[in-house]
Length: 229
Length: 229
Image 1 (cartoon, rainbow over the protein chains, first blue to last red):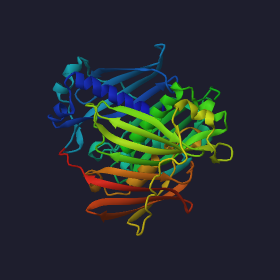
Image 2 (image 1 turned 45 degrees about the vertical axis):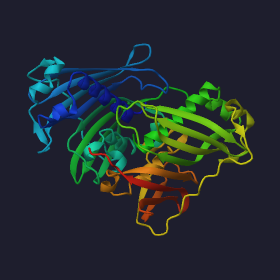
Image 3 (image 1 turned 180 degrees about the vertical axis):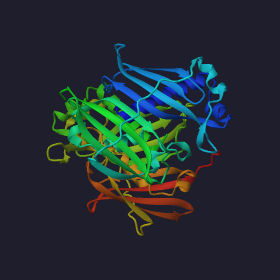
């Protein structure tokens, strides 16, 4: 399973839950807002293999006036957890394209915990010295509905910079990915990365810029892929 | 359903059938070859919508010494055919990367018809006057296993050239897509297209070049998307 596929699948699980609870896109839009994910924190023991049957679980765990905290778990066929994901969501006013208070009606059905502070996410560390960078034009195949760039594409632009030999011999163990600004159809973004070794582990730091503005930033920790093909 | 997703799904259906018949990748590779699709001809009444349940059918219909002809059908929830696809396959010697005679052992389990000539596919018409062109670098996310570029990417590179307003208001009705030469990871390809009106229908002709060599060519016939969103 690729990382973009993983992120697409957990979004589908959230949507399934939302629909089950009557939280359709139309209902949410009736409050003038849409949900936007602003950060993911992924702990990956291993990524599922072809033909494996997996179970995806999700729980909207807590929320406050502006932030909602949702967790995901991926279980392998034996029921062992192979991935856990924490995510932070905000409500965006669709007309102003700006952060809005979360309408109580769109979180009430979750029966999740109202908190003063949602769990804190670490801020991904910025690049100190660029190892490589490249430009990417947003393609028609990169967008979902509404000229919105699929959130998983940022991962493609980040990962694509890494050498092929590295990618086929390593697996991500931890990813901290923060979305800062929207990227839109037709934009050309710049993806930069830095590769370094911290405590004997390979770490990569990534930044996506859109017209000089930071659009996304991420830190990856990698582990050698122990498997023999 | 996007066109790339459609092509990915029919490949999965073929693979499922192959595995059911003992025609695993390993078994096929034991003859030094792999199956390669060289042409698709798609007749599209409509593409399936989100959440629709569809049925995919396939049949390896006939073959001769060098070519195998396989058909696919997509049925909607009511059992009506919404897409039919004809495809032409060859066996490629994996070491020489060259066309090879089809080993009888890898077609026998299909009980398909041995013929002198497989059905003839029209050759897609070449571009006469380029409407627009653009370069695309093959990304890590474009490749499957073995540094092989996913066949559906060619469609992305072709479609991406068309204006956004055209794409959201039109559906492909017929596609004739021919693969001529392999494109590999790290290559930069050039996608060109021509848009013209033939018998009141919008037609686009597409060519993908890799280092000046034709890698793929396609003709699309489009229909206005009658649906009101």
